Length: 118
Image (tube, rainbow, N blue to C red):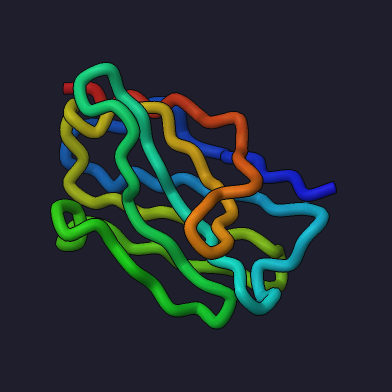
């Protein structure tokens, strides 16, 4: 069974880099045709797709977050990590990772709350 589990710091200080890791089991992040996505949810903005990394390591980012976002992977650990620089309180959200296939997401993590303190 495919499982995704987010691991994050919980609390990040203003202007620091927010990093959240998605640990994947039951599937390889290098399997052809899948991509691996970061999505966040906050009361103010609702669900917001941040970016993704595909099976070959190619990345795509939301235009509004592109200047502050990077997604990297560690294939030896079967995990991928979101880095969001210059964090502000507006980045406070629940961060989810998900597996994408075509136009839908078939597996999600349970989400992890990250709060940016001012």
